[in-house]
Image 1 (tube, rainbow, N blue to C red):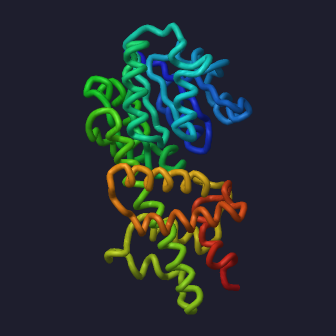
Image 2: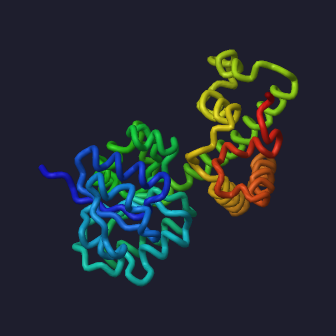
Image 3: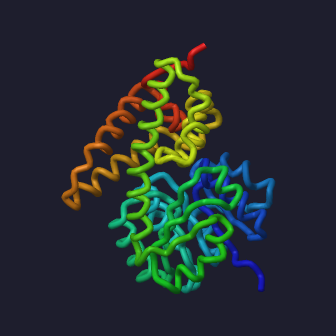
Length: 296
């Protein structure tokens, strides 16, 4: 059987890595991005450019999104020239890899099905662009069983772990929880590193020294050394995006009547970092709030 025709909207840091992975996996990909110059990263590898989200949908059996926020998803799906305006046959599936509001996801999924007959799988990811290039993402999926099954070969090309957590919105709810853990984790790593450097400890030895203990994990083994080296170029993720996600975590918690003082503190740290002009910097650059430069 031939591979399904894929469309991809949103060629940012993550989107670029995902498209390159899908092309290498043998999927034909039609792509669109609001800033067309970003397509230059994927067209030489075999992607085909489209003039609008609607044109992408018309050329696709399965459509993937990876855009900045809820409003951006709503615009590319239901705005002028959006996916819902395409005359694509019913039965397609939209896979949204963006990180957006669970309630908005449910509403948009219902509307898309009603207006076009397309299914919707919310499938936010964790792992970063390198994991996307290597097909090692962690993917949290929500949606109808049949839609997730149809999306499965595409998700399998991108992720080492794909978990169907429930109906529409379940994947985004899991991503809210993921970002609560990750956002607080970045600040914890920055504070631990700042204290280690101030105390004169060999901070480079700390990840190996703590391996296998309760403090171990990808934050300690990947992010802590990145902060230690102040290795922030090119960005794997941006501080402004983490702030957006943490704000969304707090909004979701308020909806459910849950206080999250630790996440509130982490959000305040990222808000201060972004206010200092670091919004486009790598998320790990939050260490600069504590110690701008490593000890000589």
